[in-house]
Image (cartoon, rainbow, N blue to C red; front, side, top):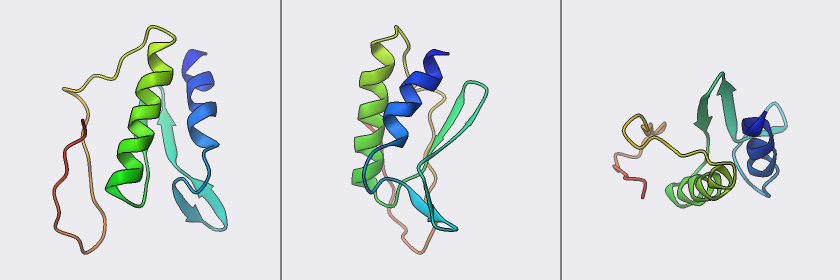
Length: 82
Protein backbone atom coordinates (compact mmCIF):
# COMPACT_ATOMS: atom_id res chain seq x y z
CA UNK A 1 0.00 0.00 0.00
CA UNK A 2 2.70 2.50 1.02
CA UNK A 3 4.99 1.33 -1.76
CA UNK A 4 2.33 2.21 -4.33
CA UNK A 5 1.99 5.73 -2.92
CA UNK A 6 5.75 6.22 -2.90
CA UNK A 7 6.20 4.96 -6.45
CA UNK A 8 3.36 7.17 -7.74
CA UNK A 9 5.52 10.15 -6.79
CA UNK A 10 8.62 8.62 -8.38
CA UNK A 11 7.10 7.48 -11.68
CA UNK A 12 5.55 10.80 -12.64
CA UNK A 13 8.85 12.69 -12.83
CA UNK A 14 9.49 14.62 -16.03
CA UNK A 15 12.03 13.11 -18.49
CA UNK A 16 12.61 10.18 -16.18
CA UNK A 17 13.37 6.62 -17.27
CA UNK A 18 13.57 5.20 -20.78
CA UNK A 19 11.14 5.01 -23.67
CA UNK A 20 9.58 1.59 -24.30
CA UNK A 21 7.29 1.57 -27.33
CA UNK A 22 6.55 5.26 -26.78
CA UNK A 23 5.86 4.95 -23.03
CA UNK A 24 8.21 6.30 -20.35
CA UNK A 25 9.27 3.64 -17.83
CA UNK A 26 11.48 4.45 -14.85
CA UNK A 27 10.76 1.56 -12.50
CA UNK A 28 9.77 -2.09 -12.32
CA UNK A 29 8.21 -3.47 -9.14
CA UNK A 30 7.81 -7.07 -7.99
CA UNK A 31 6.56 -7.56 -4.42
CA UNK A 32 8.91 -5.38 -2.33
CA UNK A 33 11.71 -5.25 -4.93
CA UNK A 34 12.11 -2.13 -7.05
CA UNK A 35 14.25 -1.65 -10.17
CA UNK A 36 14.93 2.01 -10.98
CA UNK A 37 15.71 2.68 -14.65
CA UNK A 38 17.45 5.88 -15.75
CA UNK A 39 19.64 7.01 -18.64
CA UNK A 40 22.44 8.61 -16.60
CA UNK A 41 24.21 8.26 -13.27
CA UNK A 42 22.99 11.71 -12.27
CA UNK A 43 19.32 10.95 -12.98
CA UNK A 44 19.62 7.61 -11.18
CA UNK A 45 21.10 9.28 -8.10
CA UNK A 46 18.38 11.93 -8.21
CA UNK A 47 15.64 9.29 -8.43
CA UNK A 48 17.16 7.21 -5.61
CA UNK A 49 17.38 10.36 -3.47
CA UNK A 50 13.69 11.06 -4.16
CA UNK A 51 12.80 7.43 -3.35
CA UNK A 52 14.76 7.70 -0.08
CA UNK A 53 12.98 10.93 0.92
CA UNK A 54 9.51 9.60 0.08
CA UNK A 55 10.17 6.23 1.77
CA UNK A 56 11.22 7.83 5.04
CA UNK A 57 7.87 9.62 5.28
CA UNK A 58 6.28 6.15 5.68
CA UNK A 59 8.97 4.79 8.01
CA UNK A 60 10.56 2.72 5.24
CA UNK A 61 14.26 2.57 4.39
CA UNK A 62 16.40 1.49 1.44
CA UNK A 63 18.55 -1.50 2.38
CA UNK A 64 21.96 -0.41 1.09
CA UNK A 65 23.40 -3.89 1.61
CA UNK A 66 20.91 -5.33 -0.90
CA UNK A 67 21.08 -2.37 -3.31
CA UNK A 68 22.89 -3.01 -6.61
CA UNK A 69 23.51 -1.06 -9.82
CA UNK A 70 23.76 -2.34 -13.38
CA UNK A 71 24.85 -0.38 -16.44
CA UNK A 72 23.72 -1.25 -19.96
CA UNK A 73 25.57 0.09 -22.97
CA UNK A 74 29.12 0.77 -24.03
CA UNK A 75 30.21 2.76 -20.99
CA UNK A 76 32.72 1.10 -18.69
CA UNK A 77 32.18 3.59 -15.85
CA UNK A 78 31.55 2.29 -12.37
CA UNK A 79 29.27 4.19 -10.06
CA UNK A 80 28.41 4.22 -6.41
CA UNK A 81 25.07 5.48 -5.15
CA UNK A 82 25.25 7.71 -2.09
